[in-house]
Image (spheres, rainbow, N blue to C red):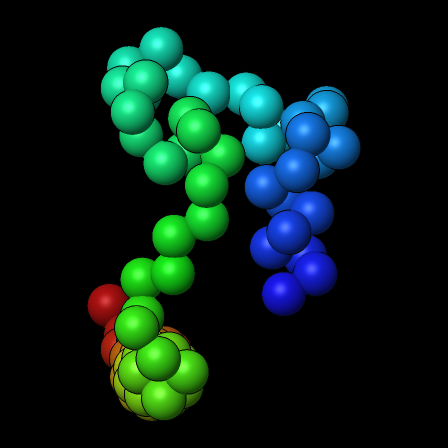
Length: 77
């Protein structure tokens, strides 16, 4: 929670964090422009489920990539 509060504060609008660097195409009523945090998941359980799905997808894609690389190493011209 502390990092979220810091990144929404005026102290983070500097060259290092860059939270004040916005494009001109953002509408003025956007939460990003108003520096308001929006939690996409309604509960902590929904967030944990989403992270679990992301972890499973990452493991699967790494496994597929390693398998593809092993197969490509054996391919000869």
